[in-house]
Image (cartoon, rainbow, N blue to C red; front, top):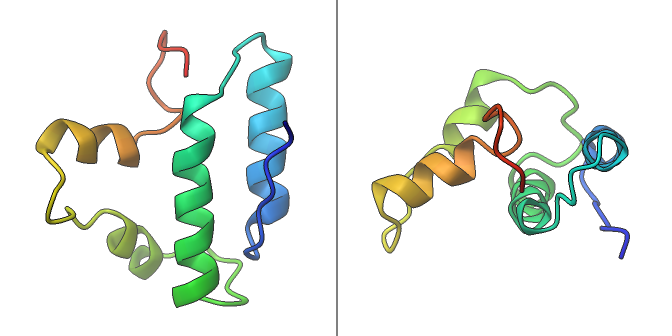
Length: 85
Protein backbone atom coordinates (compact mmCIF):
# COMPACT_ATOMS: atom_id res chain seq x y z
CA UNK A 1 0.00 0.00 0.00
CA UNK A 2 1.35 3.40 -0.97
CA UNK A 3 1.26 5.82 1.96
CA UNK A 4 -0.50 9.12 1.43
CA UNK A 5 1.23 12.21 2.77
CA UNK A 6 -0.45 15.63 2.72
CA UNK A 7 1.95 18.20 4.17
CA UNK A 8 4.42 20.32 2.24
CA UNK A 9 6.93 17.54 3.01
CA UNK A 10 4.83 14.95 1.13
CA UNK A 11 7.21 14.62 -1.82
CA UNK A 12 10.27 14.23 0.40
CA UNK A 13 8.55 11.71 2.66
CA UNK A 14 7.37 9.66 -0.33
CA UNK A 15 10.87 9.72 -1.86
CA UNK A 16 12.35 8.62 1.48
CA UNK A 17 10.00 5.63 1.73
CA UNK A 18 10.62 4.74 -1.93
CA UNK A 19 14.40 4.82 -1.36
CA UNK A 20 14.19 2.62 1.73
CA UNK A 21 12.03 0.10 -0.12
CA UNK A 22 14.32 0.19 -3.19
CA UNK A 23 17.18 -0.79 -0.88
CA UNK A 24 15.21 -3.86 0.18
CA UNK A 25 13.84 -2.64 3.49
CA UNK A 26 10.12 -3.43 3.88
CA UNK A 27 9.77 -0.15 5.80
CA UNK A 28 6.21 -0.86 6.87
CA UNK A 29 5.96 -0.01 10.57
CA UNK A 30 7.77 3.29 10.39
CA UNK A 31 5.41 4.61 7.72
CA UNK A 32 2.82 5.17 10.46
CA UNK A 33 5.27 7.38 12.34
CA UNK A 34 6.02 9.32 9.15
CA UNK A 35 2.25 9.78 8.66
CA UNK A 36 2.00 11.18 12.18
CA UNK A 37 4.85 13.60 11.46
CA UNK A 38 3.20 14.56 8.18
CA UNK A 39 -0.14 15.19 9.93
CA UNK A 40 1.54 17.33 12.59
CA UNK A 41 3.28 19.40 9.92
CA UNK A 42 0.08 19.82 7.94
CA UNK A 43 -1.88 20.83 11.04
CA UNK A 44 0.67 22.98 12.90
CA UNK A 45 2.94 24.23 10.12
CA UNK A 46 0.83 24.36 6.95
CA UNK A 47 2.76 25.25 3.83
CA UNK A 48 6.16 25.20 5.55
CA UNK A 49 8.82 23.49 3.46
CA UNK A 50 11.83 24.15 5.68
CA UNK A 51 12.68 21.58 8.32
CA UNK A 52 13.57 24.25 10.85
CA UNK A 53 14.23 23.98 14.55
CA UNK A 54 10.67 24.85 15.59
CA UNK A 55 9.24 21.95 13.59
CA UNK A 56 11.83 19.50 14.90
CA UNK A 57 11.30 20.59 18.49
CA UNK A 58 7.52 20.31 18.15
CA UNK A 59 7.96 16.72 16.95
CA UNK A 60 10.47 15.84 19.68
CA UNK A 61 8.14 16.62 22.60
CA UNK A 62 7.54 13.58 24.79
CA UNK A 63 3.87 12.65 24.76
CA UNK A 64 2.09 12.06 28.09
CA UNK A 65 1.68 8.31 27.50
CA UNK A 66 5.05 7.81 25.84
CA UNK A 67 8.14 6.31 27.43
CA UNK A 68 11.76 7.22 26.67
CA UNK A 69 12.20 4.34 24.24
CA UNK A 70 9.05 5.17 22.30
CA UNK A 71 10.15 8.81 22.04
CA UNK A 72 13.56 7.70 20.78
CA UNK A 73 12.03 5.34 18.23
CA UNK A 74 9.60 7.98 16.99
CA UNK A 75 12.23 10.67 16.60
CA UNK A 76 14.82 8.39 14.99
CA UNK A 77 12.73 6.81 12.23
CA UNK A 78 14.97 5.69 9.41
CA UNK A 79 18.25 6.88 10.88
CA UNK A 80 19.36 3.87 12.89
CA UNK A 81 21.89 1.92 10.81
CA UNK A 82 21.31 -1.79 10.61
CA UNK A 83 17.71 -1.62 11.83
CA UNK A 84 15.00 -2.50 9.37
CA UNK A 85 11.60 -0.95 9.88
